[in-house]
Length: 347
Image 1 (spheres, rainbow, N blue to C red):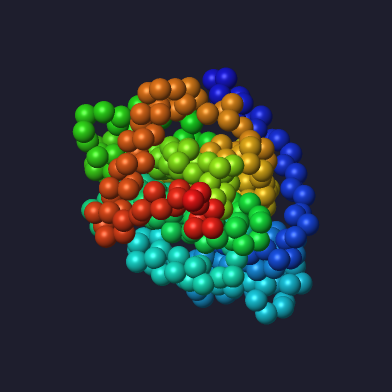
Image 2 (cartoon, helix red, strand yellow; image 1 turned 90 degrees about the vertical axis):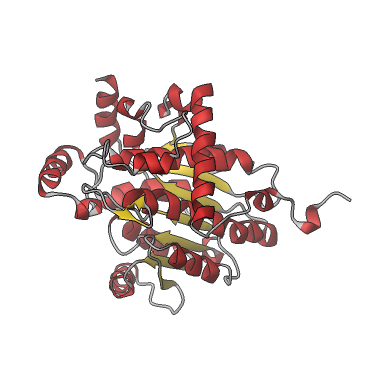
């Protein structure tokens, strides 16, 4: 119950807009799932703040163009190049690769806000894995890992500190998630969580978000922002319960429950998007951290995630992500990401 009351308090917390970076007119941002909800509001804020370029990563280019037109109307940013729509389908790792290859052609990249995700209330297996695990974890982490070289190169070229933001959820931190991810027994995490037994309307989504938090913590550990050449701040952010269409795939009973919860407690998508902006502008103290209510909130992360047992689970989740990507033909050389840039090597 104490955690519930804390959640209610947090939902009614006033969320400030973060200060606009002085050099935002030179910066490039990518927001996935930007045609609706939190992503739309985040991208619109960035345009309104004067960002040099905002790239909307969307599954439907047509819907993305309609969203961009609305953003331009709201912000007055009609100049060519200020907003761009790129196709990105997180159900396809090939689409993630193509999107990442386009990002590699940019002159600079200052932040990736990985916001796109799905809630599934019916179990679907795609490419041998449950769909929300594929989209929210495997594809999202592939996008993050493929984007890191451009973020690192931008840091070195422009003497900046880019950000990699994974949009997670406070539902991952609830006590009923303790033990939800297998930590022993030699069972692949994704095989286990893809099984029909254990799949539930309101349990699968938090599990995917818990995997994200473990992955962010491990990636940040492997790539310390202060010591890695081309340092990138990597964090996870929870926007809280918001009015969005994230539950568009939910069953009717689930939508009814969520509608009641939203009526009582939800933030607007605009208010929730402020948490994404805070994470996209956050300092090195947010590296590997959990952010919510527009600040670093590591105190909300339970001990079962941060203690020795949690760290063992974290490593297991990370290794299973890399194994899954490799098995699906999209292997990642994480050691290369942690290696010093050629000009920074000690001779």
